[in-house]
Image (cartoon, rainbow, N blue to C red):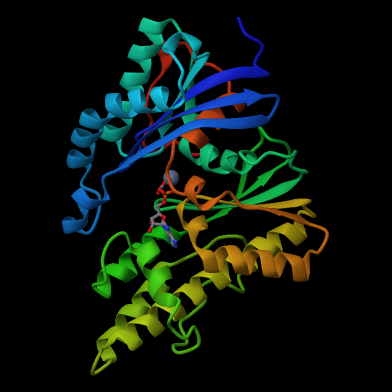
Length: 340
Ligand code: KG4
Ligand code: ZN
């Protein structure tokens, strides 16, 4: 058995609509990314305005072995040099998760390698370790993805305490639904953030739901409805108005996320604030979090993964594999509603 301080991990991710595999070399918390392959199904799901689970699973099935082969060949590594296989087992779409988990179990059995069952949300958080340096604890991480919006308090790198979450839509879901009601395409997050660049964030005074509430929960469905009513009331719509709506919506959503994250940082006297998940790719959110942390908590360090490691990928799954315990392959089970 190899010392876990120096191992090479194959990561496999298929929880939603990206089939991904990556090879990560781990040397005592210093990571070297040998390959990072992501095969996106966005073009397949775009005509439906959202992910169709059946289509996603079928495409994972077609793509998973070529993607794994590509990850191994780009890393210039043979299967016998892989020390561990890390695979996402939840949360996510059950049929999509099954493809990755079954593939990982089959490879683990036939290559005789250990397997690590990975919680996708923890993996998003562990993306913050990719560019290394030790992280000072306690830390708060804002996890914002298509299915989740959570504030997580960490006392060390293996302790995750949820201190707040969305009561309805996730932040990414709100971006996607707003883009759908404005008829500007799918997925909404990157499109809204692009259009917002030429818009006025103060053009529309959208609500900041729960910004003053005495807890760390969020709510985005009222904000989405406010955008819908504003859109309906406008007699004419043009590119400029769309850009203004996008910028104003993005401003309202980011303000709530940032204010509550900073407040949690103050309450728990954290040493680090982290950001994770697909919405962490949003430039405005990244910039506002850095700006407000510097203003309000100047001693607190801020960690944000590179944009390509915020959205779904297998490098973060492999990184999580380094920190999590092995599971006997026959005990690996998928759980679509797995929580932190
Ligand atoms: O983490 P992720 O890739 O998948 C899930 O685990 O859900 O997150 C996907 C979500 C989608 O809702 C997408 O619209 C959003 O992340 N997203 C963004 C941006 N890029 C992706 N939201 C806002 N701004 C972005 N630049
Ligand atoms: Zn994700």
